[in-house]
Length: 93
Picture 1 (cartoon, rainbow, N blue to C red):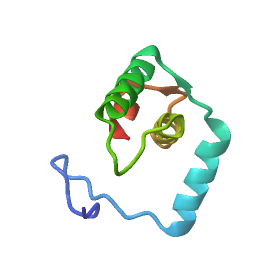
Picture 2: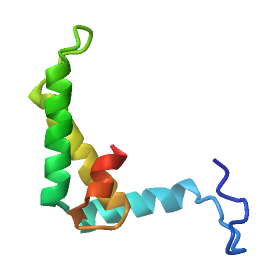
Picture 3: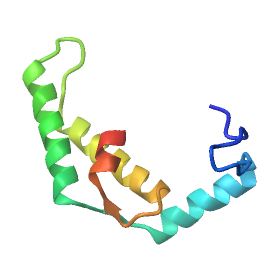
């Protein structure tokens, strides 16, 4: 993905420097503490249940897996500048 290409709106997108990216991550980590919406919670729960039902012999699905999905969806919500984990965040992970 090349974020410097022109989009349909004609605006040139610039690649962020590492310093700007670090500052953004630090700011959203400090400012946002997302809570889970009911739709997102339901989606993650159903995905976890499906993975548990599959009973893959190669990778066991534990509660730790569900906890990881929750943390990843919260991190995605932070990066998207939100205080609530939406269904879009749950789908993204």
